[in-house]
Each structure stands twice: as C-alpha cells, then as structure tokens.
Length: 114
Length: 110
Image (cartoon, rainbow over all chains, first blue to last red; front, side, top):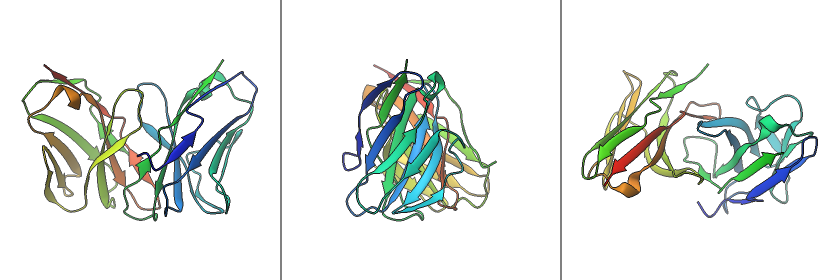
C-alpha cells in the first residue's frame, strides 16, 4: 500500500557496516511491524512497535538488531555490523491498532550485504 | 510454536480455471485470517480477510474458513495470467502478532 513509506528501497552495505531502514506508517496508524523475507521464503515477524514502545521483539535476533519508533519521525530498524546472512527484503507494515486489523505493507527495503 | 502451513507449490492452472489455495494453522486461538498476494520483487498486498466460519466472496475471490479443522482456503475463479503470484496466508494469533505462511506460488497458464 502506497501509504506506508519505506526508504531506502535498495541498500547495499559492506560486511561490518551499519544498515538503517526507515518506515513511515500510514496516516492515522500508530502500530508498526517489521518483517524479514529471505529469497523464496515467507515473511518472518521481527518486531512490533507502538509509538515510543517496543511491544513484541520476539522475532528479532538478540544481537546487532534494534528497532525504535520515536514520538516524532519514522520507525527505524537498525542492523549493526551486517553480515551476508542479513541480505533480505525487510518489510514494514502498519495498522491503526494492534487487534484484529489488517496490516498494510510498505514497498520494502532490499538489503544486500557484499 | 504457532505456525501457519501452506503448500509451497508451484500450483499451475490453465487460464479460466479455478485455483484453490489451502492453508492450515496450529493455534486454535487464532481469530482472524488474511490472504495476501505478492508479485515477485514486490510487497504483499492484502486481498481478503475472513473472521468467521464459512465463505466470504469478493469478486473472483472466495475465502473459506473452518475453525474446527483449522483450515483456511482461497479460491480464485476464472484465473487470469495476472493472478500469477505468491499467495501468503496469515493468521492473527493474538498477542499483537500475525503469523505468515511461507506462501504458495501460483502460475496461471495462458
């Protein structure tokens, strides 16, 4: 859905660098979800955030990965010291609330680690 | 571990036929179910949601839910080549989390 904006669309990083992925939810949506999709695989839940709060980060690796959704500005998914295995499409979705509501996806950020 | 299972396919049907996509889920507490379509290299696009047992129709698409069997399906009537994509089944399991299946690849042959 064009309403969820992700940038950059494509990101190339060398091993060991940091990757920052941004997601602006649809207008009126205060709930953001990050998913990772490896080639030829389904979406894997990483983290669910509301403004200024991480609600569920059970799908996120304990090391090198972090996420935030500040009071002002987009949600950020940060990957430190990237490795080749981090290469994937990272999708952000937003919904107006966290219960029983369809989520709308952004266009994704395709991260390539070289 | 809460799971959503789909046959990865590919499922190949001729143009004009009915495509039937199936999905099972493990968490009996799942409340809502969604079908997303994803074209290669694109983001998932919501095409159907279903919340109660039975059928829900929207144009050429019909979603079917059977909570007793923990089974969800999507039927696409009069399949078109433009329907060729990966179809992702998703279940909202509560706890603010939606679980996705790995997707079924559909090919509609002209």
